Length: 504
Image (spheres, rainbow, N blue to C red):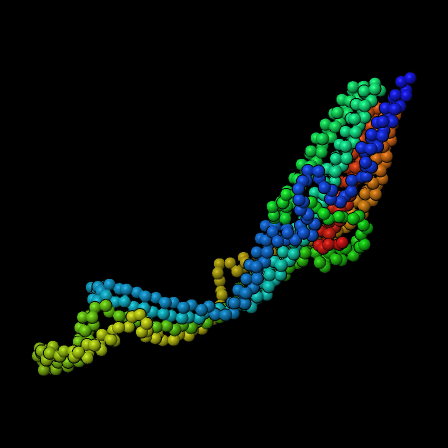
């Protein structure tokens, strides 16, 4: 007589389960909405993330700054053909005090003020002057290649981290599904225990399973947020609230052979191009070091002017008076010597300055600051030949030779690494694509096994332990399927990074 109520209970439980349990599709690799998101949601595609990273990533901006420096060095190398121009303006004050040298007084007793100007042009030319522009252009091309290489590496890093966020979101969605399933199993265990067809141990096990699933969901959601923070860290911007990643990544076969990929990588890989540019710069650097043995032609020209003014007008007038009396004093001295007598300077001392002469002397003294007297124009050419400088040239040439050889070795090493990297990434992608197919089959089988275990538990044929084991197998299979999908996308991104360009 107990079979009829039990059958009714099973039928009721099955109807409730059918009403409450939606179909359980496998979590897709697209961007699922996490239940923790509330309010307006900001969307972010992979292309937008890469564009933001190119504009804001600090490390990339430093590389761009180095490129600007390299272009400035190119302008400087061409500027070496132009003479250096200098303009000097100066002013000076000197106290009115005589200076004694070996007991002989020099200098005026009046303070003086003076000003001066000079303009000069100087140019130096040797073999390095003509090699410099080629060398700096090579360095500029290397800097541009470094920017391209850093940009491509940043694009690959952002793609990888974007995929990591999507993978964690897919895992969180799986944990949501498993939590809903565990809660339904708990309700069913409670219903069966109420009619005596299950034990309290089954209910406790179901409760433990729900608790464990809640912990797993919490950790999965937390890992999603951590990976988002790392994504925006690579982008170089602050993370907005409730951001959703919206780019879908289809699984599609690769339409290139490994030979085509290697050919594209050899021609366009930014890292390889950067190393090749460094090799060209190293070759020119060696030639520039050799140019130290060549002579240097130096050209120089200068012109200028000066002013000098006494601040004491009485001193100026005295000087003018002495200059006027000087011919008379000289004549009287000569006559006195000829007549063998003492000179009589009374007539000379009677000579005085007229007002006009005094004014003329003061006007002549008034030169400061811009009544310049021109200095003689100077033109100079010099040819110097290096002879010996303590083996410093030999040291620099040896260092440049080693740098050139190292650059060539780096190119060869990068070519070998490129071949190995592209080939390995191609093989990894091929294996990852096959792994996705196998893991999808395994996930479908595990999902069917879980459904069968749940149905058997409803009719009392299987135990709750069987259901929990089937759910654990399903969780493991789904996680492996998700991992296989995103391992495939990572392998695709890794192949793109090895080639140095997008392939889809």
